[in-house]
Image: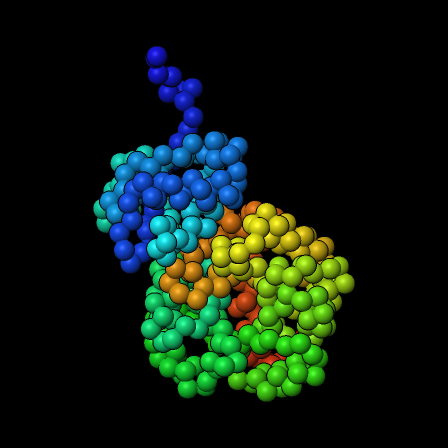
Length: 110
Length: 239
């Protein structure tokens, strides 16, 4: 299947986040908890519009991509996550950007 | 008009947290400062309230960060409420009452010496009479993000109650407060995330920022009353 031309693709923004936790959290557990929190707060329809993908995650910081119009929804979803795998956590959004390179440079490698 | 949100601009936003030991509270101060808050109110409950602890908190406060002591009281009768107000009015900057029950909510909304009514979403919410009294007497209604995150019942029901409360407060021109209500470092949230969550209860961006600022204006007013500079609403001794 051919990929869509860039003008027809949905516009994406990249959210840099930081995990405040005393222990290490796996990427799989993080993704599961984001999805379950999202489904609880905004439901399946809104989560489908969000189009969330975890781009990278190093155990402490990471980048999530989401649809441009739903950045605030994702912020809210990340705010309500308080436990992952029975470990207390808080997810802090460091910043938002239009490209992975910029977000990486500005928020992850500082 | 909404102020700029860059780190250099001082937008004067304040949070409310709960006292959790000196080290726990200090951790929360540091996080709040990192999240670009200008200060916070630290609520004590009646058991943990101690004037020495307040002095100690002032000592560990980070630079360019303001801390105001507050007290959350739990009451079930009007006489006890009045007595507690007279006991603590001069000791703290903010007095909040843990609501939830309809009777308590109504009683507190009639009391002009109370600053904040908390946990209105825990019971059946507030009615139009309570909202009207609260607006008339300047009692601010708190919307606590911690209640939303750590709720043990249905999230849709809680959001619905909060939305109804906010609608009534807006209708009668009352003031709201948006607070994280954190008790540890995991409970403290950045203000942008709190505003994003508040959109689910019907607050827009402007309302969210105003809710962060309301607490500071009330602290200033209370300090003026205590110093004797503010005689009554609208009458102030300038020099």
